[in-house]
Amino acid sequence: MTDEFVRLPHFVSVKDLTVDQVMKIIHRAQAFKRGTADFYLRQPVYAVNMFFENSTRTRSSFEMAERRLGIQTIPFFPQASSMKKGETLYDTLLTLGAVGCNLAVIRHSENEYYNQLINLRPDQHLNVGILNAGDGSGQHPSQCMLDMLTIYEQFGHFDGLKVAIIGDLTNSRVARSDMQMLKTLGATLYFAGPENWFSDEFKAYGEYCDVDDLVDMVDVVMLLRVQHERHTAGEDDQFDAAAYHKQYGINQERYDRMKDQTIIMHPGPINRDVEFTSALVEAPKSRFVNQMQNGVFARMAMLEAVLRGRQLGGLE
Image (cartoon, rainbow, N blue to C red; front, side, top):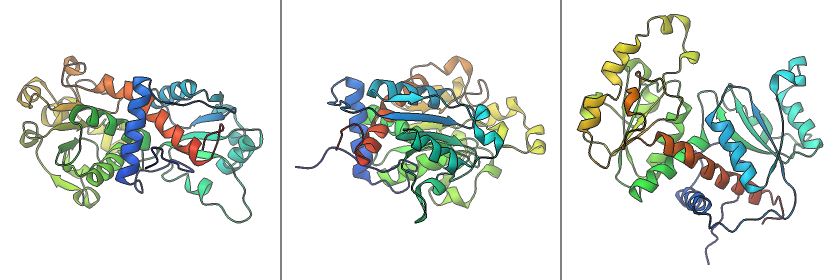
């Protein structure tokens, strides 16, 4: 009998996940969403949520997922921690592990910050499971999992689906995680947006196209937020929101050209009337709210994978 569970020591990237692991996580997320998952912690588990960048969806979603699983959370505020005195991220986690934290959900501006926490030297003994809530412009595995769940709910498969990823590609950890996973799962990818945000990194996964050549052809339109906080001052000074929306945004005319079954996705927060016409954010083809709902269940499945991988809470 095939084991239905995924077991991981950490959940920091989607790059090395197999198709089988991804599908098991999706199915567990669906079971949590239906309320049919057989899950019970027999021993206490403590988690700390460490967000060094602002967050609404990811932070609240992880907190809700933890509460639904029965995980107890320890408050952490970076601005009030000893990191303000120069303590390293590793030593902060060493402290939190020593006082009893089993899991750490971390969002950090540094790409691959987690390497120092999971690739330990022989003299290091950090015993905390790390879940990556977003690292710089690198990976966003939990957004990727909730996106895969949302797509799977709509189509029931990935193989052969045509997906357009549109927007601020260079600065997007969502684009990187999702393109890697979608290609692994058999989807065909296309990219659009300002051409200076498209590089050889993306060319390896799909071709660059004009938005108007894509909207009536693809099954999924995945919009990316224009990330002003990651732009240089000069770059952002030249940004024209109205011009961007006209050339790359989803407006009513483009919405109407889409196939009936096509869905529009956005990781949030949305720059209304930039990536997406404000009146369409909750339109029938939009899955923006559904993605946020699915985030809780996808993160429950991710947390469970690390709980089982580390045999926490009496789980195996």
